[in-house]
Image (cartoon, rainbow, N blue to C red; front, side, top):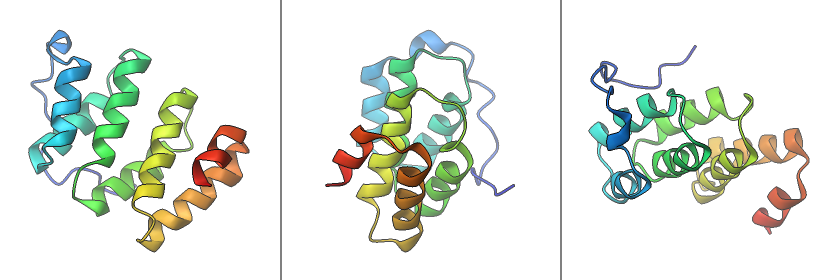
Amino acid sequence: MPIISKNKPYSFIKNLEFYTIKRIKDMGSHPSQDHLNELLELFKQDLSIDLKREIASSIGRQLDDDIIYNFLKQEAFKEHYMEVVYQFLRTALYKSKDMRFAKSCDDLLQYYQNENMQKMKQ
């Protein structure tokens, strides 16, 4: 299994009430390795669909394309709400100048066969 995070897991993530949509959006707006690692750990938690969607979106806004690509490769075909899958596709589309993400985009579209996803690509 590819390594997603280069650093130790954030075991301090205990107070999940601290993480609001606004807080997660702020983390996405200010990319850093610490924010990326924190978002990756948060994604593993049992959270509301709105928070999961925003976490996926904020991960896609980070700068380490290798880690983001490995995250997509690991998570995109697991059982997630479609709102989260749409964020995976948006990340792949946004970063599609990198051939890995272009292929991920095609793989997502082929796997899900979803009309909304097809429209996003147009």
